[in-house]
Every structure is written in C-alpha cells, then in structure tokens.
Image 1 (cartoon, rainbow, N blue to C red):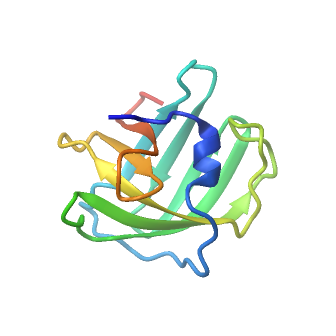
Image 2: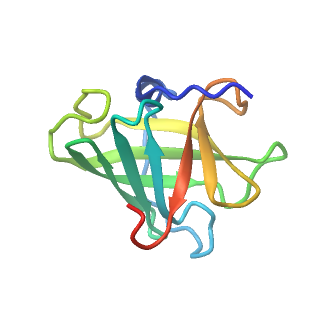
Amino acid sequence: MRILTSIALACTIVGAVASVSAAPVREDHPIVGTWRFVLPDGSCHEVYRMRADGTALITSAAEIAETEFVIDDQPDAEGFYKTSDKIIKDNGKQDCSGQVTEVGHAVASFILFHPSGNMFLMCLERSMDACLGPFVRVRGSEI
C-alpha cells in the first residue's frame, strides 16, 4: 500500500465541486467524530471535527475553517465512501502547508476506513494509490 503523506496532496485532492451543501448524516456514521492527521515529520497536525449535521470544524496550524460536507451513507463495493467538502468560513491564516484556503473552495475525495473504524485514508480516486493519511480517531483529551 502506497500512502502519500503530503499536505500538498490535500490541496490537490480533486478540484472544485460545483455545489456542496451540508447534508445530515446518521449519528452512527463512521465519519462522525474527531480525527487527527500528523505530518510525517511531526511538525504540524490537523484536527477534523466531523458533525452529524454535515458540518465540520478543521484546524491546521494557525488556520481554523468551517466546512459543509456530504458523504455516502454506505461504502461502495471496494469500501470507499465518496465525499465532497466546501469551505464556508476561514480565519485567513496559513495551514500546515503554508497555504490560506479560500472560502468557497470545494473538493471531492474518497474515504476508506480501517476495519477498526478508528482510522481512515482520504484518496484522490477509488484506489489507495494516492491517499493522505492516516487520519486517526481522537477520543476525549487526546487532541
């Protein structure tokens, strides 16, 4: 399994999506919760707080962003969940890659959960050839 662990990939994970509006997900959907991604060199991390109302709060270095997302209710035959995410608010500060994400920026990706449900990869396609991760579930005071 080849996993790309560069934040630059996160910036390129499939370009603009025409329209993304928050769509509630079931409370027990595997995406609901808090997830942490750490750069391979340990220099920076991102925290994703994915809510059942279809919104998320993301912190990355000095950046704080709010997003709206949609995600499949069930995985496809290969285990991937198609998802789309759009920035609706941003504090204008730099993220782990040194970039400032513009409000309105939207991406589509494919999420693949580990069987434990406590990790996932975010991939460009329905393949593990170009993925960012792992994102690890955060419990309680682990942030």
